[in-house]
Length: 194
Image (cartoon, rainbow, N blue to C red):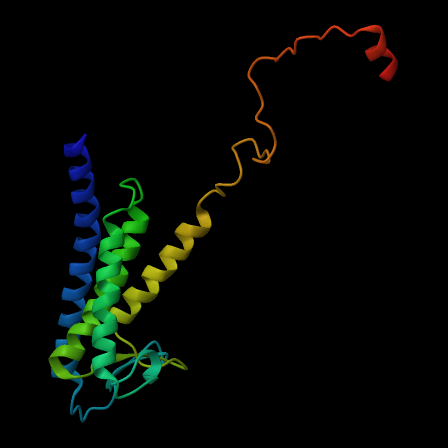
């Protein structure tokens, strides 16, 4: 029994951690490319899809969309705590829920990717711009996709308060066989009350 549980935990953490590591590596590689290719570019901003998608190197000292700028230590502590909480939570997930495991891996990978920027260079490197939207990076995209998958997972789960037959769980459960109740003998005074 203990061996099966250990193997299940290993599978859950392996999937969640594997997705997270993949996101961190891809995020850091794209940020290195962006810093080397887009900084000091005199050729202008690379534009794709008729200007709807542009590559613009920026930095972000705050949280999402630049809010709470210049609070680097706060974001480092919050990022470490949240990443730890998600990884601990991933260890108790049911092994037959890979969508949930991938969702958490995306979120942890994105958080660690941005956290490593804050620790390494003091700010987050952003470089993807979609028209009318703030500049972001691959880690931000992973977090958003992970949250989206989590919402989808939670909304697609059956309501635990309902049974398969759609019966209200507060009602008495149906018996597979009719239950007969023993008849009681009523005396003459009991019949008159009825």
